[in-house]
Length: 325
Image 1 (cartoon, helix red, strand yellow):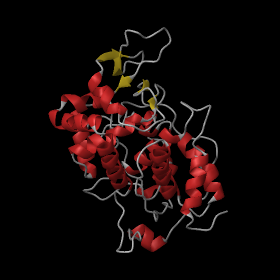
Image 2 (cartoon, one colour):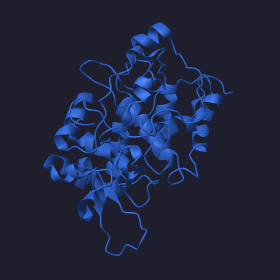
Image 3 (cartoon, rainbow, N blue to C red):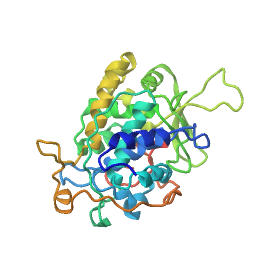
Image 4 (cartoon, rainbow, N blue to C red):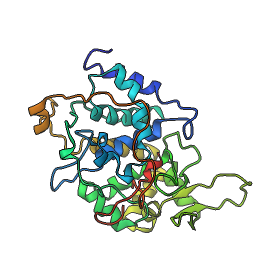
């Protein structure tokens, strides 16, 4: 067991968990990014509820949300790290894992600060319906992300998380990867969004997505895909400006992504001048690390309606595409 506060040791053990030959494209990195994203993406600025503080996904009320389908794998992959460092909270572990994964998969260094505590029960778990639905459009994206305090530029930058991972029909309902190398962080998502011709396709489950029909593809080749929310980024003029900037300038995208992802995992976190978390739960209860859970994936594995990153309009439930991370 490491010494409490040795986050470098935790980082090293997170890195050791990234290689997963039998999982998706061989890496747990994308699902770690999605786990961090979803643990924080429930924040509501008006009510100051939700966010990464608390690790509410440990409870069925949040972990069982169809929008979080598949994240049980990411949580289980991190259990060996929790076992070696029982002092760290799940809320710190999950957000740190996302930050580490971005960097190890070739992305930018994202600022991360510790101090989140774990909820002692599910009384403060946020209501379902706060995560995005990939089946929607530009208005939905602004409704979801403006609630958290993000502007158009930040929405497009966060969508760059789709450079990683893939969608699964048994989770979000969508199917396929966004880019050719889904375990390498880059600005390829934006380049392909602008360069390729995206054709609407209805899957066997009735879900509609967009695919690139490669004229040179051979039988069995996997199609690249985009969500309706992804395509909305190029049909909406204000979003498209940033898609074009990020497609042209990888350094600019990396800089903006690092800043907005750091902002995402800090949503709802209040700190004093020294960086200590001063949320009421933290002040009253201290740094509470919840007991270790099972190393085996438990929880929702199938989709409800819709998808994410990027549920249906105001208050509907959904699965998460950014997800297939």
